[in-house]
Image 1: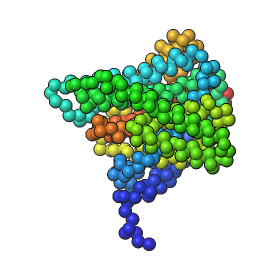
Image 2: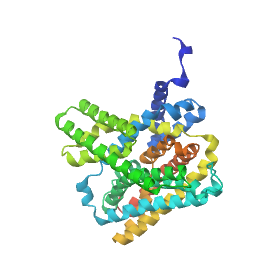
Image 3: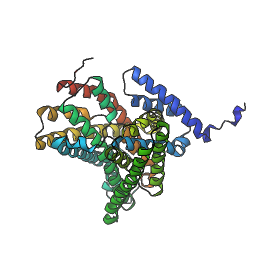
Image 4: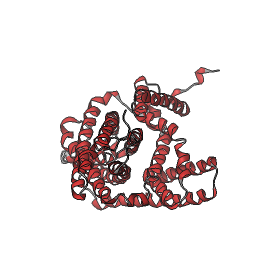
Length: 419
């Protein structure tokens, strides 16, 4: 065996293997200490980064296929939870509270990043003397606010199952969490296009282009997802064996990711619509999602470990401050939005008082959207600070979220099992 032939600097397969094995070990260790699995993936990725085990060039440039596949799977599974029949039964509480708490997080994060950014965060954005500071920080604030709309379902589902929680509060909580991810995907698509226009044309903004482009992106992505969704429905009617069905679904997600990149559309939004079409148009659809659940752990282990590997200790001071700003802004926005929405909808006092505690988790969609930042030339030079700030905020939220969800479930009296 010729060990000298091993080229770690140009060996993506070796890197994928390391991410997979190390990520699974990190997830196992996290579960042992009763931490969220995703936190274990991210922390082990940070360790890989600090140890410089995987070359940074691979992490930054040559492992994008992991991100594309993971975003497609996340989008498909999120879409699969948006069953119209169930949503109709949730009533006005869901429809009113959801936009208020999601957009509340967007607004408060955007306001804090825009106003505090010039004093505590050096993004290093070059601008001429005629450019107002608002054009330096507002674009970043818009994007990070949009990402903050999301709420991760995994931690909430796990805590709800662990304590056997049932009742109106639990139903409202889980429904809002699912809808949050859908709103975040759309908000990001809209916000990122506007932000790119602000950065690239800060003194001469074409507002028609800035507002039209996001809608072309959104509707184009939805159309692509709908077409592939109906194709999957046809496949689901004829394919009964799980191995073939898994091949068809994963193949469709690959096609969706590839076409989205080629057409400059949103992969995660298109995949979400694909899952939405399947769950609502195909009666026997359980296997259409169960087969994906069978492979998601290895995919997510690679993806979240890779996300953690983007950790850059040289900018942690700035990223750490940004993370605190994100956590504070998102928390204020979620609680304020719940309060306003619950008041308008006439929700019960328990919903108004405790629902905000259930909206802390952030993970899959949040990290997935943040990883897209490095693909936009407009954010060149500042994307690492943004990604590391978001990663740090995810770790903070994921560590405290399970305890806050448990607190809310017991306070509302819907948890049926104790520790």
